Structures are given as structure tokens and as C-alpha cells.
Length: 202
Image 1 (cartoon, rainbow, N blue to C red):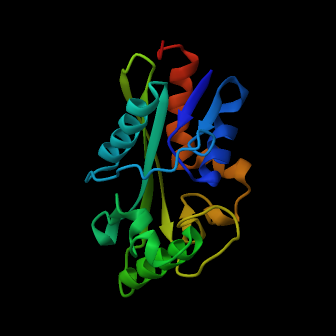
Image 2: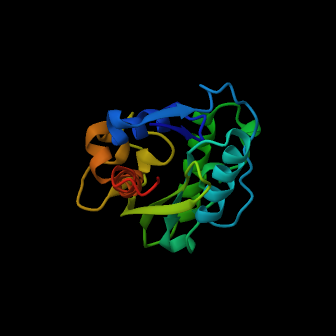
């Protein structure tokens, strides 16, 4: 079964295809030669995920899903949250996702300077729309701690400064296979995968 994944991010595509296995083939926006900006104007992860999925479903009329992920830091009252990807500013200010991710981390650590509580959680919400237009939401959460020094070369986003509970490694230090067992995205997609394999989407 082919499902459109509403992302241009190759890291996400690789990670999620590994999670779903060979039973489902993910079709990326790049595969569809789709280069338009997808709106993300909502104030919640759930709202953003649904907005993106609805946008793609309206265009292609095929089963599709979108996800939105936020880093929620307790001492910052849940920030950066829904603004995690653009915490330091729009992509146009930095040129590349790598540069913007580095700026996001710098801003996060600056905002946490002087704080005593570095506890945080990553939360992923998936919005899936089947071919009949029915909508479903799935969630995954992993709790952890923000560290002050970047560690690791893998992953993306805030991975170099996030250490999940029960581990001495950051997400960026973990092999993808290990991260996929415990991450917020893995947990959300586990729920999504279970749903798909039960045939509830039909």
C-alpha cells in the first residue's frame, strides 16, 4: 500500500520508512515533485498535523499523513512546543536546515541559562487521512533532559542536546535502530502502524 508522507525532510522519510517496514511504501512530496509550501498556521501540534494532511489530501485525493513534533521544556512552560522547528526564526534567515537547527539549539540553551529544571519531553502527533477522507490522530511522547553540551553526530533538530530517560546517550549519539525503539516519533508511528495492520483504515 502506498501512502503519501507530507514531508520534504529526507531524514524523517528514512526514519519512518524503517519504522513501517516493507508492507507500506512511503511516497514523499519530492517523489511527487511537489514543491509548494504546506501551511502550518495552527497553535497546537494536533492542529498543524491535521492542516498539513488536509492540504495534501485535497491536492492528491490519496491516503496521506503528516506529523508535527515539538520539544516541550518544563522550565520554559512548554516552549518551544509547536514552534520548535522555527524557534530561532524562519528558514530564510539561515539558508539551510542544519544552520537553523544550530540556531534553535543556541536559543534553547540561552533561554535555559540560570534555570534549575532541565526536564523536557518530545511529543509527536500524526494525522492520517485515508482514501475515504476519514481522519485519525496518533501520539507519542518520550521524556528526558536537556543537556548543556552538544553530543553526537546523528539525528537532527534538538537530538544533540536531548537525553531520554534511562539513557546516558543523547538521541544524536544513538544508532538509528536504537533511537527507533524509544523515540517519541517511534512511539507515535508504532500506534499508527498497529492501526494500519489491523486494517482500520479501510
